[in-house]
Image (cartoon, rainbow, N blue to C red; front, side, top):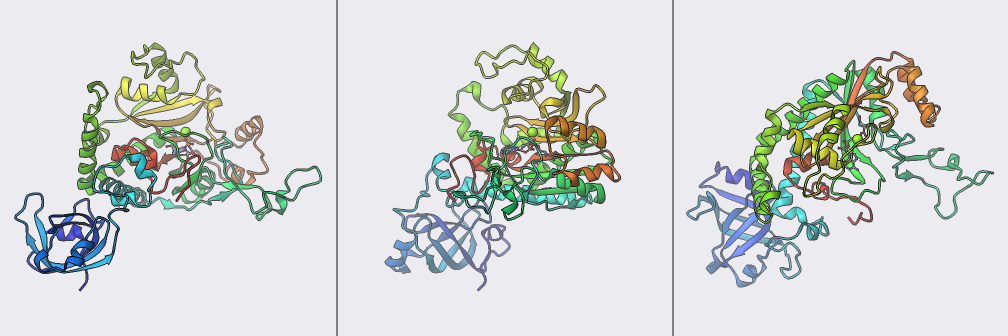
Length: 477
Ligand code: 4AD
Ligand code: MG
């Protein structure tokens, strides 16, 4: 007999027939009621065991974490809390789980504890929900772009380029660390390395993406990117997933329109498809909020917050206007936002971003036209000669979720900028070819996928929205 997923069983279509369910025991009450979960939904199916006719030995083996298979009649349940249940006639233990040793006990565990058990935490309600939401968000990303005719491009993970020029790369080498070959002047001889040159893991697929946009018109990447920045924060991962659309003939305004439409679409898509998981996560958050002082509690519940983003335009503000706002702001009494910027040209810290989004505008904000000297080399210089057509999208509770720009399409201006920053023209000869042959206005952005998952699930630590987080001193699994 083929087994049926719990999600389908709970839809009721097979009521009053014999069914088979397979999954993992969450709890076993009164030697009679099994709460069985198979990952297809946040909900468990109740399996009622005929304990009088079940051997004592088998009953003992129905423990939290055990894998089992049950066959029985699917009936409408008389008990509160579930619509349907299985009246078990046959039960098989597929894999035992020692109840004393199984770390995922049927109680609330701290997120820290769960992180240390990243391979098992997915068996909890919260992580099951988060991972299903993450998967649907990924599907939404592809659906959005595919429906609009964008081409999905897989840019290389190993590259010689530092797209962001921030020097935060993980090196890739096949040379022996203890005794690498050296050139005559004593430097490591990367010509003898696997690729015949120095390489690293990609920090962004943008530069390669641009070359494809200049042929295919509109493309997007969606893949892992790597940053060796030593930021041990709740918003940074060393390995994170980024979505990078790139569009020929789009200017910065088109780029902002695309980003806003895209984000709203994928959130809406996920609300529609993940009602049960999001309601569960919302309930979990409401519980958490209760333990906080009134003043620190969130003003909106999770789904309300998501709908707010769908229903309101993102506020578009230039960097210069933002600096004026920050300068005029008074430090919050609780010192949450004490770093008031006085200087035009300084980069915004996350405190500033959050002040603008959460206290001043109270909605997602797109900041644009940043000072050239705090942004990457490839951004289009404005006519004022000191700002670039950059945009960052800032979200409540998160800060920067998107970074993007109109690209410098003028060969001479780009080369001039690279020279000024000491970026090797020869290394990026292929990138410069896009400006040599048929250059045109084009724009794109990068959305940090985990930051979006954070926002949609209401979680607060980025380590909790990726299956196996990589952070400084941590790559256990
Ligand atoms: O602002 P960033 O560095 O922009 C780029 O990489 C551009 N090449 C994108 C483009 O224009 N195609 O990164 C883009 C986004 C950030 O806004 C943030 O959401 C996310 O990537 N991000 C990180 N997410 C998690 N951990 C990190 N260490 C991140 N660094 C950036
Ligand atoms: Mg950025």
